[in-house]
Image (cartoon, rainbow, N blue to C red; front, side):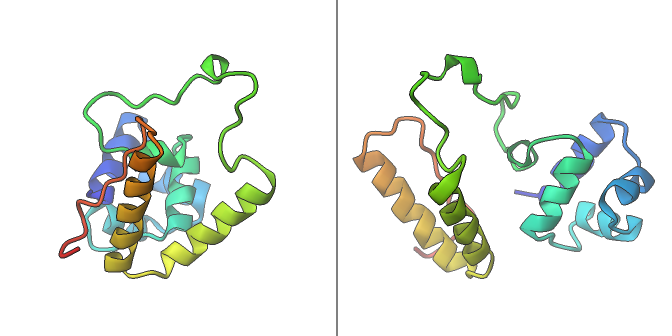
Length: 138
């Protein structure tokens, strides 16, 4: 995925300038330009800043699909079902996992994603999709 290209497309669709991004995120215009040009790779924390500045969920910023992005409607969820890691112990565990994954090399990230995909298939989770296209030699 070319995150810079996606960021530029979303920024231009929302008619937001580099200067406005700088005001909203505190990141210099030149840095935003380098990210959009593919000459800098932002951290997850920086991507979260970009998403907030564009008033988008982070998942939409990272979305690669052909169809327009849509979040599931919470009203269609069963009353007794809660989103995973929405709060409490699960949320703390997911935050720790995100921090640890940020320090893991690409090959090991791919291995973890591959394992998650296998586990999702084994548990018959039809909508669980894990992309490992960026990882080679697994």
